[in-house]
Length: 270
Image 1: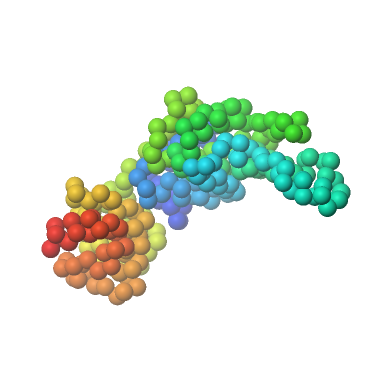
Image 2: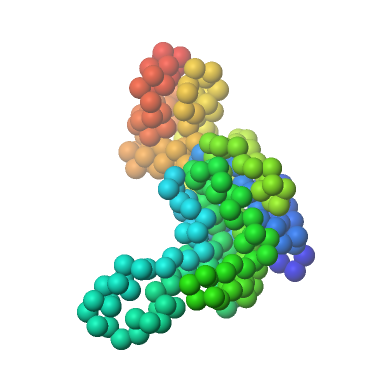
C-alpha cells in the first residue's frame, strides 16, 4: 500500500483497526466505523489525517441534515437581497452557490480525509441519497449546469452509533469495522498517551474501579474511554492517592452520569 495509517502520539489504534483503515484506502472505499460512544470513532479521522499528513474535512450530521447539504447550497435569499440593493453581478448565479463539505472535499487541490460523523442521526434515506456521489465522486449543480468532479478521491470515514440500521445498498459499498471496547492492556496505553507521568498505582486502582463499574449489569450508561481519561485527570488535579480509591470513588460524577446508575454503583461498591 502506498499510504499506511499507523497509531499516532495522540491516538492508539489496534492492529485490526489500522488494517481496516489501510484496506479502505487501498480499495478506495468509505470506511464505516461503529462502536460504543467514547471509543474514539470521531478521533480516528483526526488521527488518520495527522498520520498521513492530510487536511481533515468534517461533516457533522444532525437529524435535519439532507444529502444535498453536503453537496452545495444555492443562496437565493442573498441573491434577492443583493438584487433589491442594486449589487453588481446578481445575474451570475455561481456567486450564490456555496459548496458543502462533500463538495469542498471534491474541489480540494490535494487529497483530504472526509469525516461524515454520526450518519445514523439523519433520516433513513440519507445514506442512499449519497450513493451516487460516493461511488462516482461527482455531482451536478443544476443552477449553473456544472458537474463537480473530485480532483482527488477523498479518504472517507463514516461513523455511526447504531441508532438506526443503515441500508444494505449503502453497507455494500463500505468497508466495515467495529471498534471493540479496549481491554485493560490497550486502555493503559491510551491513558498514558494523555498522562505519561500518571502514578502507576493510581492508574491501576482507577482502571480496576472503572472496569468493575462497567461490569455491573444494572448500570445503564456504562462509562466510556473518554470518561476514564477525564476521571484520571480529575483524580490527579485533586491530589487523590491510590489508597483512597480502595475505599471510595472521589469525583464519581465524572464517570457515572445517571441517578439510578449512581445509586447502583454506591450499593455494589459499599
